[in-house]
Image (cartoon, rainbow, N blue to C red):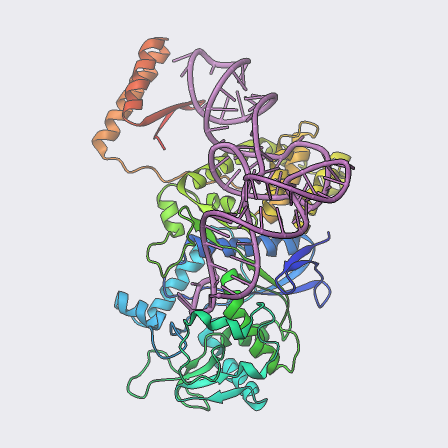
Length: 482
RNA sequence: GGUGCCAUACCCAAGUGGCUAGGGAGCGGUCUGCAAAACCGUCAACCCCGGUUCGAAUCCGGGUGGCACCUCCA
C-alpha cells in the first residue's frame, strides 16, 4: 500500500517512507492538563488516530508518543500573564499537582471513549526536566543561548533558517506588535529556562545549573521526542496553530542542539473545528464543549468520531448540533446496515481458515479503492464513502462485504464488531413513567383486539407527550422524541 | 502591517482537466394494520468576472466574501 502525506515542510504531497524500514517514529503534541479538553482539541487526536491506524494498516509498526504537558507556562514571553496550571489550581482550590492528575485522567477517559489507540508512550513534561535541562546545556555549549534578568533565551539570529519552516519574514513579522520585547534581543527569541521570581515561590519549580526555575514553553517536546524516538522523527503532528511559534521553535532548538540533524521529516498539521459563527473553538474565549456534554445530550462518543471522519483533516469542520445529529443518524444507520453483513461473515467462516476465503475480483476492486483513499493523504471521508457504497453493493455476498468492512474498521476505528450500547434512559419521574406505561399497555390491548382506530388514537396521545412508540418483535418500546 | 487557507446542491462533505463521490434531510415506492427500521428509486451544485483549452468545479488572472496564524491555544 502506497502512502502519500501532505508535508508542511515544503507544503506538498510527498510519498512517505520511514527512516528505518518498517518502523515509524511519530510524535504528537498533547494537551496541557489545566482544564478539560474540548471537542475541537479532540478532533486533532481523532485525526491523528486515523493516521496512526492507516500507517499500521499499511504494515508499519508505529512508535507513537503523545506528551502530557503538566507544567504551567506563562501566557506571554515576559513575566506578565498567568500560569495556566496555577490559575486552574486557584480556580478550583486545589494544588497544581491535583489539577494535573484530575485533567490527565479526564483526558485519558475521553481518549478511551473515542476508541483511540494507546500511544507507545505518554510522557509527562515534569518527568523529563533533566532532559530539558540537558537540551539547554547543549544549546548553551554551542553558543545559541543568552541570559537576561528573567531567564535563558534562544538567540534566533544565530539560526539563519529560523523562519523557513513557517515562511516567516522576520522583518515584517512584528508589525502588529503584540509581543513584548522585554530584555530579549530579537522579538522572535524564545525562553529556554525561566527563573522563579525572587519574591515568591512557584508551585512548580526545579533546580538547574542556572538557578531555580522552570523550563521554557517549547523545550519539552524537543527533549521528550529525542528521548523516546530519536533525534530525527518520521512524523510530527499538531494543530495548524502551532506552525508559527511552537513548531518553528522546536525545530530551531532541536536542530541547533543536534548540529543540524533534521528534527522531523514529515510535519502533519490538523485544521480546526469551527463553530457555526465561524470561530475556532478555543478555551481562552470562555465557553467550550466537552465530549461529556455530547454524551449528556444522548450522543455516543463514537458518533463524534464518525462526525470527525466526515471531513478531511486539513479542512475546517463546522460543528453544530444539527450537523452532529446528521452524523449520528448516518453512523447509526451504517451500523444497522452492517449488522447482517458482519453476521454473515462470522457465520461463513465458522471452523474454516481465512485462507479458504480468497478475495474475489469484486472484493479486490473495493479493497484497492479503499487503500487508494488512505494513501491519498489519509482521505478518511473518501474511505468512509467507499465503505458506505460497498455496504450496498449487491454484486457481492453479505459475507464478502462483511469481511471487508470488518477489516476496514481497523482504520475507521468505529468498533463495528460490537453493538453500540443503548443510550442512557431519559430521566422521567415515576408518575409520568407509570402514566406512559399505562397508555402503551392500553394501546397494546387495542392492537390485540384489532381496534386500529383506538390504537392510533392512543399513539397520538403519546405523541402529544413527546413519546414515540416503536413496535418490535418483542413488544412495543417507547422513548422520548429527539 | 505580514503570511497562509477556504468558497461545491436544503445541510455536512469528497473530488485538482473529460468518467454517478458519499452521507443526512426531503420526495416517491416496497414492506409492515398504522408507524418505526430496512430496502429500492429520485432530486439538485460547483461565489462572481475574464482567460487558457476541443473540453474547466478542477489550471491562470482579477474581484467579492469568510477564516486562521503572527500572544497560551488542537
